[in-house]
Image (cartoon, rainbow, N blue to C red):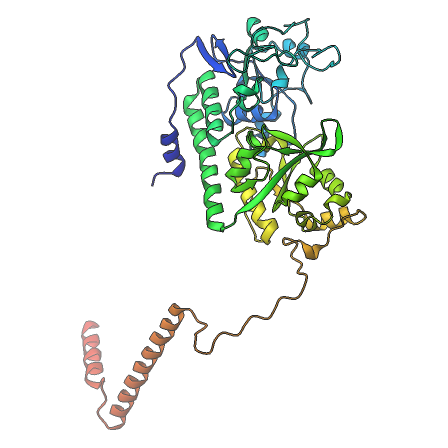
Length: 464
């Protein structure tokens, strides 16, 4: 039997082996490398997991910026790689490990420091590769050609002999980002990394595994008969307004994961990957489920605390029923666990809305313990009750008695009825035969006399 992953592997295909020097285009920038990188620094968790998923840990000299727990299936490999910083490392840290390649999910990983006279943030200073200005730093001819608010330093890193790769949904110029991230966006990223490191077959296999997860998620949605709406809540407070909410919009990996899980993203009409909205917009949208991001710097439970202590949310059905799902920030970024996250979102969404028991594919997506939510919100403006949650196992009223089966219909399965009939017929046959034998015995004409004599005689001859 041909495995589904092998069928998908053939469908997706593998690129030819890489010949170096190798040139590729990434976010409108042409990058040239003379060999497969061997001293890679990964600046974000998504690209770290991409490298580990492709078995390229031996090429990694350092990692940074862990958003939450590393995917458990890669924990052993991850723990053997130096962590340069809990957030972004400084340019001095990167240069100290003699990096020959830098990878990132977000373009901020390549920002100049300081970004402006009033913004001291950033990474690369004039002491290393700065200043970072000019073509493909301040403006991108392949994109909008608009001057950016601050420079990114990829051209300067290339000039210093350090290659780069940036995930496309966060290209520096939004005009170079895909209008909508799709499954193909994931496959293209994996394939390009396979080319850079000359592991095209590994890339094709990983793509097949991710594709299979997406495929199973779609089938699970179809078979469940559920059509649910969702909003992804990333954070409370944005654009300097503490009363606004940072939610998933229609262009990035967040929308990809929601839609792949069969959920309708109620803010998919908004441009970009994320947008700031008011509480009233979330309440009026009234999602079936609220998918809440869990991050090391901002826990999902803190966002729940905020909503349940805000009167604007008290009458919202999804709040009253605690139709919440937790998703790790790392699973919401483009990475190898996107397919598994979609699978778990399907399961979790069905569970919290219906109470049905579901499977867990260990992507980190999960629902909350109802008892914890009740305890957590007990003293807040919008307290929860177990009886209001479909997945608490506590009903608001005793279940009605089961209706009696109609008198004219059997409560047994057809096969059971057939078995009973067969045994009844056999029993009847046995009774008739035994009765006939007894009658023959009593009338002096036993049925087996002559045969028994023959058997005895034959047995005696055999013993001589």
